Image (cartoon, rainbow, N blue to C red; front, side, top):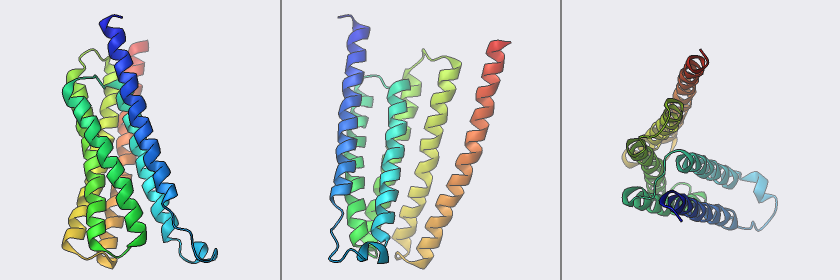
Length: 212
């Protein structure tokens, strides 16, 4: 087995292990849903559903960008491997705090843990993209732009979780902090849309240059 084939096999094994950890975490998220004493409670209080769907969507989003990172940039060196294991541990803790938050909706300590861990998860993934872009010097301009786009989204989506973490450390979880949290995610969604348009224009320019 030559070096390239061995490295490719290692990458697939690391990605498969990561997928198993993330899949198990999502399964635990569903398994942790408490059975109501009466079925009508499922419809009279939908906090459990909102908390579940939000955490599920965030983890699925991170999984997608993690998959793209492995496809585009990951190399089995010490720093990327250690960061990947640390990231997986943080994702598991994110799911754990999501479970707690659905049962202790007004507890400030839980929300501090929640936003700090999600900020750390997105931040670690953004850092992995940054390191990968430095290591990989064999990317085509199109591949580099695509990887930069994914990394930029990870950096961008780290910001609202950092803001929310600061907010819940300063204010008790309630109407004031809720407005700040909503504003941060709405603003990030708008910025994300504008960023996507800019990268699409840049990608289109590369395509025009390559066909010219």
